[in-house]
Every structure is written in C-alpha cells, then in structure tokens.
Length: 232
Image 1 (cartoon, rainbow, N blue to C red):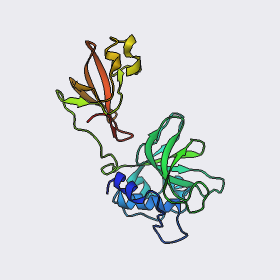
Image 2 (cartoon, one colour; image 1 turned 90 degrees about the vertical axis):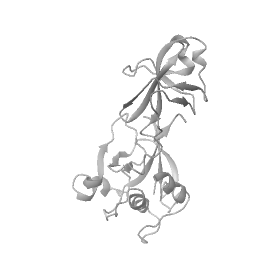
Image 3 (cartoon, rainbow, N blue to C red; image 1 turned 30 degrees about the vertical axis):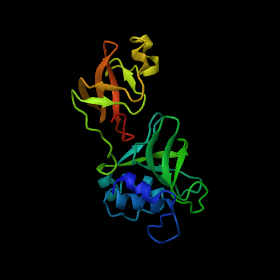
C-alpha cells in the first residue's frame, strides 16, 4: 500500500494495531511499517525505545537509518519521528514531508493530550525531536516522481522558483527575477509551459533548465523529501 493510500484510509481514525491499551502512538507506527513498508512489526517497547534501541536492535538497523536532530534538519515524508516527553515514555509519529527549519508536520496518534486521539496531522516544533528513523524501503513512500526528459514540455502546477546556476546557493523566486532577466520573464506563473533543455538529479531532487528572457535558468520540478512534483 502506498503511504498516500494508507493516510487516506486511516486519517481521522484510531488505529489499535495490537489490541492492547487502546489507541497509542506506537500502534500508528506498527500499522505504517506493516502496510506501507511491508515489514512485520516487532515489539520494541514504549515510543522512547525507538530511540534507545536505534543502534542495538537488529530489526531497526536492518530497516531504518537513524538521523539525529541537528539545527536545520527537516524530516522527509515517511520518516518515523521520535520525541522525548516529560513522562519518559516518548512519542513517535510519521512525517508528512511538509515543513522547514522552524517546524514540520507529521501524522500522530494519542497526541497531544494522551487521550487516545485518532490519527491526526499535527504541526510540531523541534523542541523535543530526538531524530528520525528513515526507512530504507522508499518504494511506497515516494510515489509522485514525474517523468521528465530532455526536450519535453513541462507545465508548472505552481509558481516555480529558479536558480541562475544549479551549483549556486542563490535561489531566485520568479517574482524577484526582474533583477536577473527581463520584466516579462519575471512574470512566469502557474500554468506556464517550458521546454526542458536539460534534466539533472541532485540529492534525488529533479531540476530542469530552460530559456527565460533569453538566458538559461534552472527550476525544481520534483522535491524528493516532500515527494512533490511541481510540473505536469
């Protein structure tokens, strides 16, 4: 089952995977592991054990790569997020892929009050995030990668943002491109069609180059972390 289908099926419902103690956050994780990753869940313990046993559990080490939280880190879609709590029991959730260095969203259960709340999309700060377990199997998580080739016409489904050079750190939002190219080129909007002159993949993100105001510009057409295409 793809992650998107799993979310659609369960969002707003309480998952009691093991039939014990009611709806818990770990039940959500076990359901995700079973249905999206295709792996038989194992009993790890309370949520905090997903952190405590990250380097000692053969099961966790086989199926996940651990990323400890550092400033600027943003969880990717399908990451199992592990939090510390005052109770010491911890909390776990599944990242949606949406967010930035200041906040992120995930699917949670039994949160935030611990009253057996159903699966809900929650906005989190990074205050108590210990890190994430990223599944090695991304087959049914990243399912929206577009097919794009050199010479193909691409229609933007959102206002794109651009780089003058793919190796440059400078990112140019289209609304600000008048300083880079012609005023008419700066008015590129959602629904604009361009022809890809070249296609490259950087850190699993897909970029295309095309002519804008007579100059070469790069635009992101697929965000791997969010599993989000920006063209059709």
